[in-house]
Amino acid sequence: MNAEQKILVIGGGMSGLTAALEAAESGAQVIIAEKAPYLGGRVAQLHRYFPKLCPPTCGLEINFRRIRENPRITFHTLAEVTRISGGAGEFQVTLELKPRYVNDRCTACDACAQACPHERVNDFNYGLDKTKAAYLPFDMAFPQKYVIDASACTGDCGRKCQEACQYEAIDLDMKPQTLDLEVGSIILAGGWELYDAARMDNLGYGQVKNVITNMQMERLAAANGPTVGQILRPGDGKAPKRVAFVQCAGSRDENHLPYCSYICCMASLKQALYLREKDPEAEASVFYIDLRTPGRYELFLNKVKEDENIKLIRGKVAKVTQKAGSQDVVVVAENTATGEKLEETFDMVVLAAGMVPSTKAAPAALPLSYTPDGFIIPELLPQGMFAVGSLKSPLDVTKSVQDGTGAALKSLIALGGRS
Image (cartoon, rainbow, N blue to C red; front, side, top):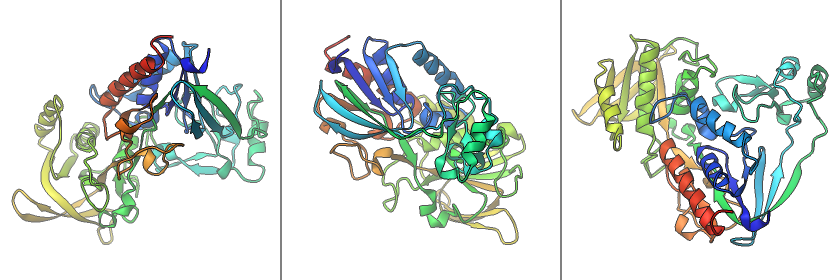
């Protein structure tokens, strides 16, 4: 098949997977390049997602099966696009493939991890625990293959994994590879990063033990998370009874992110219900500037309001500190509805950190036009190239999937219709 009939999708999150699958099932040849060692993106790290509040295993497993069954799709993990040249119908792309040190013989038996003597911080769980240097990213990772983190593997660490593997799946001689592609169209689906909450020093992240981010809360609630689905505060492993949710932690702030991150209000309301479901006696207080629950999500807000153990407080949090001689957390805020200054003690605080496009820290491998906040300006993209999902603006999963479908259609049109 010639280059004019191929589509490259850069990013294997929900919007990228959707675009790839819709294009391939319409007849195009599709290549997915994903920088992580697995497909699924941020959705894989959620406990539940809107609109049905189902676990990510639902949608992801269906998509993974569609990929396995479709010969028109190939994918590369641990892949970074380092060069793009040419134009519509004849893009030349260079991929740099990092070594996984594990080949296709891997059966995910865990023998390598059991033998591995070194540990690494678990980035999938946002640093809440550790894995061995030889690890499976998460239980339903696709591809279902272990990976060895060379930066955490020192001395004869790798040899011990190799000796433990009866399937000869450990290949310590793997080297970085360069792959040159020719494609007719490119879909940019690089996704988003969580804003660094430590940059807001008044909110205590990184200084106060039991201040966490919204994504860490997702991992605590998830059955495949560091606490096997039990919401326990990281400082001492205690189940929190009173939790404060701080909205707009960085968002709508000229000193950090001047825009609304769109998903934060809904995420915090959802997580307040996580807490209440796990412990019917637990209490949640949500400090907000404005609650943004667009469209049908207003019904979800009404459901939350009916819960007497969830308080919605309109007010900006000024400071979060450690309570002296305790693991508890003190929140200072102003209730802007009453003018009252509040100072309350909580077991744990969850910061609704904002959404930052991945292109903010790592721009695409060719000159593109960006907003000051790092979002791609789609109207100024080269012909034959399309951006999807949160690379253009903050979006939830549903809208990202819709956007991925639209990008697939645009790519097919750019290729001249169905292959």
